[in-house]
Length: 242
Length: 215
Image: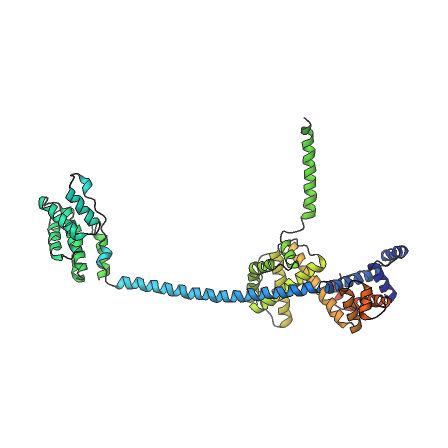
């Protein structure tokens, strides 16, 4: 292309051609492929330069903003990696602590409280409107064992064969650390053919457990036969004792 | 009674309008908002691009002989070229941004690997197929990037007088102002501008790269 052609291109693009010149230019674009290609490239190049300088400020501020966001993202991600590492360490420590506690509990001596989990008793609904019985029940359920024991003793003076109440009295005695009296009553029940026979054996074992006589407790537990309701619990305690 | 006859006609009309609307709209993917967000230098959108799409790129580059720093550079370069293309060519996205962006980052990284080492690199190829639209969009952006590089390289080769004049010419509104600034006549400034651009087109045309990326 000649210099004159480039000047023509520029005049065309900037709208500086007369009506006739414009017509001639467009005709030449159609007729002369080389001219047409050169013009396309000129237009493209001019457009490129225009974009490069006209929008320079926008590009600069975009690049600046992008750089900040990028730095932020990559740094934050790094530190969040560190943070998640800390979480992992903390979690591992917690797991170790719990595993440790679990084994500690497994291998440590079992406690009386752990196994003596009798439900709240309910005596009064079974008939006779006995004020004493009601008081005994209330005291026992409230954990006032000394009081409860006295009421049970009083009731049993009239009702000597009530093994259930005897059992509760014995439990109250264990709770108040009157082991001798408690075991005396429990022996009495377990030597009978009462339905509370093995309940009594179980509580005797718990009595020894509370006194930290572990070996003796274990020996008593072994006398509970497989068929008995208390067997599973007895086994559990035995495993811990041995 | 009239509505019995009017209703089908109205239906037809709306179907037609709907079709025309779809025909003009179908090419623009909803993810165009990312392009617009970049173009508007919207920090919220840019951050969401990082949050949502960077991890996949980082992962890919780290698995293919790169590291996080390399991924950071690649992502930044790709976003800049998308911005430039959107500025210059009115980029209209017809595919999901995610796929388009990932493909661009991936190819840029593979090119860098090829450039930086003669050694054979093992690439863990993605098993997911790339649809034609995504591939086309990415190619268009890559073509734009190459054109831009060629223009810039050739521009730098121009003489200082031409560079200064062109820079002033495109930064200033009118050629009269340009002439005043450069302390030359208006006619000279206009003539010089067209000759400098003409010169630039010659250099571009003669470059071996030109045939590949002809606009």
